[in-house]
Length: 174
Length: 254
Image (tube, rainbow over the protein chains, first blue to last red):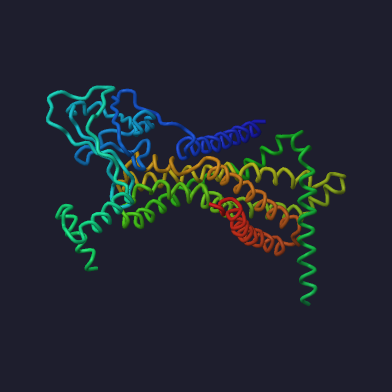
């Protein structure tokens, strides 16, 4: 009888571990669960003309150091813009109120993240504040089409900025 | 000669299928006496936990290392989590677990049943009007079918944690990006449930081959040893073949 009990306990444990593993895969690995937000962090929002392929939980960094995460990305149907909600670590509570937010890409093919550049104000961002100065994500097609457009236009007269003109010259040589 | 081999092969295939149907009719008996099933789940599943956990850990860690090596060339280390998790839940989890399961549990089942046959325990049961297929085979078959998905889930979980340990802990991939990219790309129904279905199919295939080879073995010590070898070899072939078919069915379109 003792033997029976031991085996049943082991089998119960086995089934429980298997279930925990499935639960882990469902909640932690797949997209089934929603984001859990650290309660102590504070929230700031920013409007972007284009959020690119920014994802929830992407890092928010300043000077290359991660200071928070993107907690929600929504569409503002009045302004036709993306509203990005960020959770910032409470340790970094001295972000100037005129901080700039950019959607940047890590590496050539890496994921997109929000980069913050500090302003010069003495006032600091608080919970629920909005970053006014934003620069939207770089969309490759737009950059290329602008480049081609400039190249076509600047073929005879180099009116559109010297740097871009030089780039197009380099491209011609290739 | 060739004709005889073909006919023998067909006969064995037919026998194996009839045997499976016969064993499946033992399901009501098992539900009535669940204790028999638990005893087999213990010997087939619980005793396989250790090998599955250790292998899963190392497979996940290797995936982390190799994935990082390739992905860092493209500056895409942060997709390491996706790579590790996708390869584990879709392929490696079910397949490697099934291969380990065939080696650890399948061979033991074949040897056990083969020895029961060699020592005439099975014919003794028949003499007492006890159906050995229902009484001996069916609980082992269902224990394998129950255990395989659980073991495969365990393997995938440990593997992901191993990849996390190497990727984030040793190679410095961003913690949040590892999980966030993984969660964004791994779909519960498309990836994880399909992996579970795969492991269920492999559980049926591996256990079926194991018990059939044991039951069909020549009742001598040499016959049992050959049956055990065949059980592992056929299981490996069957798992890899079925894996291709299932992958083509499940993930072929996207």
